Length: 279
Image (cartoon, rainbow, N blue to C red; front, side, top):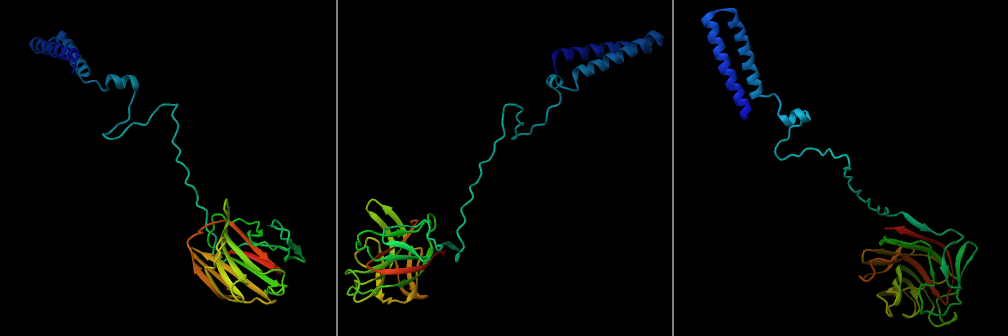
């Protein structure tokens, strides 16, 4: 309570007391006036001592109740709401069995050396390339960046047999190349196909720059059409021919790489179908 409030209350009490005394003593009309005056003074003193609102409230109006540990909302008109950052949506993995790419009869977008051509809706090789120092000799227009597990499946027929005594050179071969990437040291990735270096004819899996196969098994394609399928899943590589597993191996070097291609040397061949399938 302030000093002025206390003083007002004291004056009110004294005046009221005197007025009540005079009223009871004289019982005259002036006493009635004084009594009413005293009551008014007492009421005024009470209001002075106990105002209904604080001075700050009387100036600012009602303020919200703030409890311990909470804060009042900001009234700054220049402030802006905080917008939460958007959570990036992860790229969904393709459903196993989904055909990611299938070549049409135009084979549009493929990039290869001069020995690869399109004829009668098929991709063919005329066997004029005899330099096995580069690979692949042709690549697909489809990138598999971010997709590590897939299968490449082709249908192919040899026009000339896998036999160095019949063909133009000494090391005829064909390979499907997966998880490929071009580097300063050359192309890297895995190869699966067949070759005439392991007597007399073999299917194999190897690294693109390896001199030796990771695994190989006897196989002679002859001149019949076969379905060749390479599967890469995790660190496991399989090579299947006509639905049957021919060779498989485990290797940790190439876990990614978005290029897929093929290489052919000293072999005339026709490819009628090419597909990439999610695993």
